[in-house]
Amino acid sequence: MFKVTQMLFKRGALLLLVVMSLVACSKKIMDPLYERLPAIPAVPDYELLDPLNVPSDKQLQLNINLYEESLPDEGNYVNSPGATSINGARPSVIIAVPAEESGKQRKFEEGDDEESIFGTSGYYNEAEQYVEKDLLRKGFSVLDRSKFEAKLRDLRDKAAYGERSWLSRGYEKYLENGEYDVVKEDLKNQYDNGNLSLTEYQTKVAEVDKYSQRALPGKKRDENEMNDIAEVIRAAQTGADQADYLLQINEVKMGNAGDRKLSIQNLPEVQNFMIENTGLSFGRLPYSLPAQISANWFQSSLNAKLIEIKSGSIVWLGSHEIESWAADEVKVTINVTKKVANEDEVNGVISDYNRRLKAKEQRLKKVQDQLRNNYTKGMSPSKTYESTEAMEKAERDMKSKIRQLEDEQYALIKDIERLTYDTPRFSEDPWDYKYVVQDPIIEPDLSKPKNKLEERELKKHKAQLIKSVSRLLINTIEIN
Image 1: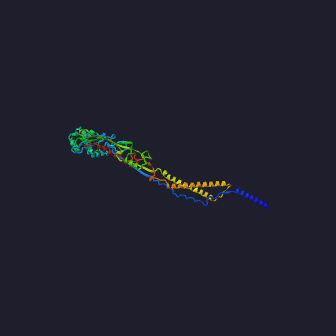
Image 2: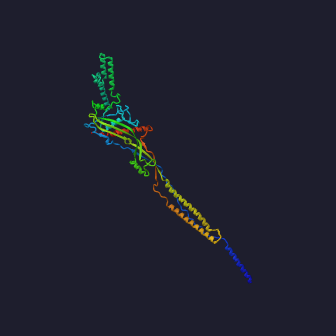
Image 3: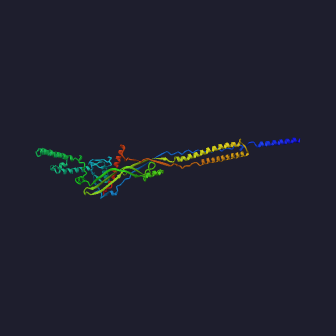
């Protein structure tokens, strides 16, 4: 009995050792980390920012009126003592103009580089009328030059025919009165009575006819009728029609002043334009406003003197020269386009903000997907390990990975919340501007006219030059 018991004990111990060996040699499985799946925080709500509306290009226009009256310099005229008014009467004056080399009248609108304005015709042309008006405004009594031309012709004719005995004997009264038929009738009677031969009679009648034609007041005579100043003075101081003064015009010219540059940066309208557009500066076209403008200016000049008829004394002497912008209003138009210069910079900030938000969201979703997978594995681990040590290491690694993902998840959530709170902020007007400046437009166009309209405008401009230089200079004559 004892032996049987001893044998059974040995067999049980052996079986226990086998079982214990089998247990010691079996695979290890990790215990679940979670009883239930941990919650995953929601992705924070946010809104992407819309780009700012970029202001449209704005068309600006700078208008400049160039006009500054250029008064004669005191060194360019002298009154010595000027004209004199006797008993309150307006002093009378006649105008004498210079001779033209061509012997023909020329007008100021002919487009020569330099042209004399007065012609030598015995009657007023346009420029002479400007001087006449200015003398009247100044207080002179301007006498009709045609009367003095007739007197001058008469004086010349008398001088020419005074040497001819037959015309100077008994016929002067009839000739002066224009009674030429009376003279012819007397010559006919002399011929009929045999006192004149046929040849003598025909010669004398022809001379009477020639004299009568030369003496007609409106008849065209010598082109230089009033250009001999000594004879003009003689005509003005004799007979019934006399003048107190003679205005001798030595020269009036119109010409090109050449390229001129005129500073505009200190003009009030330009300064105001710059204040309204603070991003605009002076410099070179097309991105800056020109500090100067250039154009082909014109210029006109007048040189004259006032002579007292009785004494022959020069009582006033003057000259003056002006340029286009000092005679007529020259309009300068500068068109400017105002454009936004920092569109990429401003809306680039918004684009960068939106890009960062989207990147944070995408990374957060990726991290949360990884967390979800790790949570799932941690709830029902199915992987077996060869040893406890291996299992424990795997468990530590899984917990570390989950902690890292959770830390990154919360950091990303905070980043998104911070970005949604700290949105880009801009001033009321965040835009910087650039300016595209076009070439100045000058009116009237003082360069070569391109059409009939520009030709007419240029003629009007030249006319105004002559009017202005005449008015400014004649106004310096003093009447005491």
